[in-house]
Length: 405
Image 1 (spheres, rainbow, N blue to C red):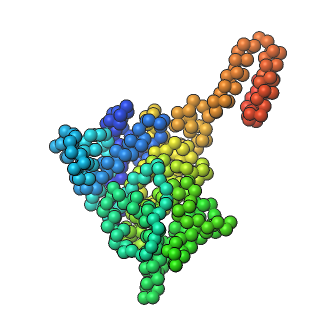
Image 2 (cartoon, one colour):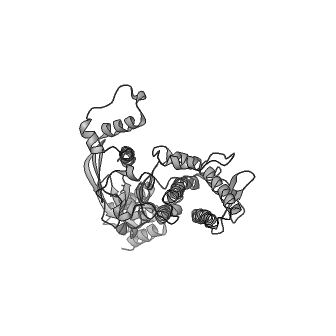
Image 3 (tube, rainbow, N blue to C red):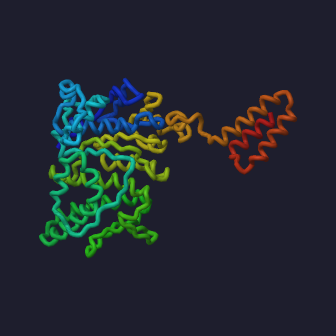
């Protein structure tokens, strides 16, 4: 096991070359034992690219190769016969070609390969769903345990085989009951109770139940309104969020087996590109709080377009790649979504283009008729009448206030 105070969480990211964005530092605010990082910025500012390059960095690191030493010894590019290269050679080539990021850690240890089987690491792309493979029969769990060593492909495997993992757990629990292994039975019950509890939060249904049908090796998510869903027929938003949880739940359970401690909260780093994908804004606000509660020792590094996401948790650093400005999550929590849209998502103001045009018409009337109050008010009333169905109570109040000046 490894404790948070000994784990090499990221404390800074130096971006050497991210296409048009070069030579800048992202310093994470010094929260203890670590700070989460939320990347914002306009499309094309490099959010997804930085996450991908961080993943390349970790893939090399998990292989046991020192990135700095390797780059100093190998400055050329691999150009020919790329299809003949092993996976690790391709990763090394990608790191060398990009030469884009350098990381600072809060520990003298920076070789993650030593912790491969006892830490949580995942790189989660924005295009995802929780569609899982059909289960025909139980399988050996060691198939899943071996996947912990394959950092590059394990996420997709854990998501696609999540139902298989649950079926294996249920079958093993049945054998434990025959052998009267009460402690193991209780561990499995806790595992499923935790999944059911999280699903209840996601579906906003405290009476949700996860039911296992032995004959068909199928799981049903049963809602209080009578709906019964399988993992194959979920709405896109739920599917996108559950895919993250499927990956991390399997990792958590496997790591606890490796260390022999069912209460152990492993350390780790998880990269998520657009955690808000397909989610209603009310659920966007709960994504990170749910993840950081379930995995308290995991550092989340996310790229987002959502003001709900950046204002949802404390102990995080928010970095705008467009302006290169840093914001503490403690400050973001106190701001309205409209403020955040202006300050961190590149909007000129919080209004729609239609409303902006309306304000422009009003300001033109005010400017052209500043010495003719009757005509000014007549034209303002005409604007109010013409656009009455579109004007909000706040804007109506502003217009009427100007007519009374």
